[in-house]
Image (cartoon, rainbow, N blue to C red; front, top):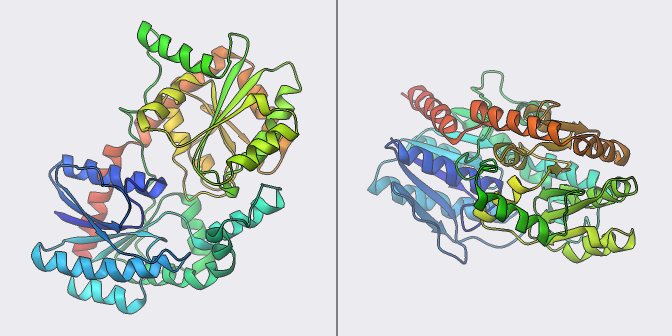
Length: 413
């Protein structure tokens, strides 16, 4: 089968969408299918995978409008590709590509049936930003992209509606995203819709090998780098330094955690323009020495950090699904996250804890409860690894999407 994916993100342009498209492409090619990925041109070179062809196209770097520009150039590239090497199914990764109804019909009529993955919605992103502002996150409206989402989400959401109507199969990445689509976009009553949660790389994200002296030595060095001793804990948060990721709330929660007898150091891993503001907040409330912010790390280094920390905290106020909890669980590290949206579909009290979004006491108490027992942390870490292996693997994604592709092809016959 020849699958063509159209995605606004692909390595070296990382992000949740880029990671999932890269991983699914790799998993499909490893079992003998051909994959072409059409993505936005970036400054670096895409990684090479056997059986995966990457086609980069130009785009206008204008907030929100880039989805239309990318969509126009992607369709042209898709038509050229199809004329040279016929495509069996087209996989759109929404909402970062915007096709109008004419473009969708052009694809269906002249190329192949469409499967649309919904990685969340523009309206959900907008509401997440508004919630972040209410919670006092730093510099919510300083980013031009966020400002554009606030005022233009409604206009661009119509392209998501078009995709729903013209796709052979719609694939939300969580039950929460499916419910959001139904409530916001008046989904067709006869649509073919299947939720498929994205999985993670369980060979890169693995638990600490406690019987390996080298692994223990590396872990001790990482913990020592942040001044973590036997009587203190290392907290980890991963995600872009963007307002809706909730890092400001987490720093305020750390102040409450460390006002007790607990001793915790927080490492935030993520790129973005809020680093200075977040560090300024930490210094202002007296936890500057207990907060470190790292830029994006290679997956191998991030995996080491996951398995060497005691607890991952994921305070994001809006996600289509969210891969960070699964990466942590695959690494044998429990997760504390919000009791909202898709996060409870992955995390519960057997693998970590949930707290009430926007409630600092709830977040702080959840963190304190989790770090109070090393034995419970270890037990929850083991259960988290088992859950990922059972339900959230790349191989499972490949199998599920192959069935969806075959259904889409059959529907067009």
